[in-house]
Length: 389
Ligand SMILES: *Cc1c(COP(=O)(O)O)cnc(C)c1O
Image 1 (cartoon, rainbow, N blue to C red):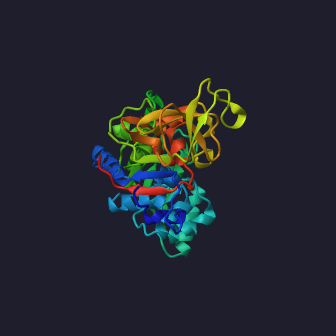
Image 2: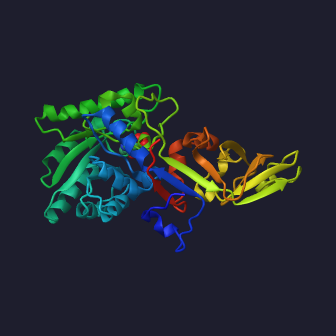
Image 3: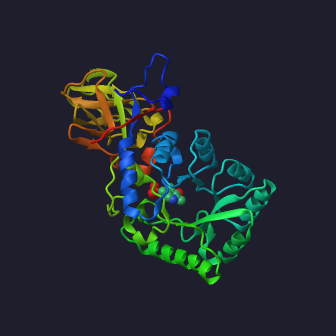
């Protein structure tokens, strides 16, 4: 097994013993995915999205990689994520995508984080606080073109744009919007959102005001399906990690998963027919079977909803998880095959020509791969490797 990198040190005992359940992130794959996206969208710039612990891949380590790769910008969801990155020495521009509260503004300014400005009141606040601090606040204006979440509606944004343009202590560096349906087969709504955004941008020409330097709108779905939405910078999240945003999206850029989730066999037993397995006794065999126990469960983000459907790979072969998934353990039916303590168990990843993806887990759990990746609990150590395959 690869030596864990220092970032995982809190999860490693002094003796160097690491929990057998771990997430292995291949930094080489992440770099390849980043470069594929970069090539595809050039001359547009790239703002990798690192919210929710970099989609489970580890916020700080992924940010360090993106900085090494000279990414133009980083996007996170919350102020706390931005501050952590600054404290860890990340110096490239960081946009906090979420809505903000007025009392957070001084922290944005202090850490040189870019504010998502989503109301006239907030730009006034930011302008005032920046003035008091004798500096300028960097902002990207958020326009709601059809998501109804955060942002000023496209149909009532004139005053917002005008106010922002005249605030002396704001550096209005960007203007952006977000798609609700860019990963769908039917792009009608996405095209409508694009039209509305175009209309917004025409404001600057009409009023002879300079357009903000960074116009942006494209998430993974739009990077793959809407070349006209690239503008000055794109915001890939899920595809940076090598996962496509939906089953129906056009796969116009080749990316490959960077994350594997692994554990090891810790127990072997033979189960008699008529002796049910796990809570609720939901599964039993009608013949003698061999079974192994693996130390992972819904407490790690291996969703209980996958009970009765999930499979794992042991010794290059797929086997079913039987009985209910517990908080910390699962039981695998290996029929009459052989498996031994310490054998590797693949929960997400590839071995011996078999493959299990985040999409597979999402299907078993009745959710999307985003939720699978972002729910792998932080108690699962992240190990970083560099492998070219
Ligand atoms: C999460 C997010 C993204 C990235 O979305 P993906 O579908 O993962 O590419 C881009 N922009 C905003 C505003 C987001 O919140």
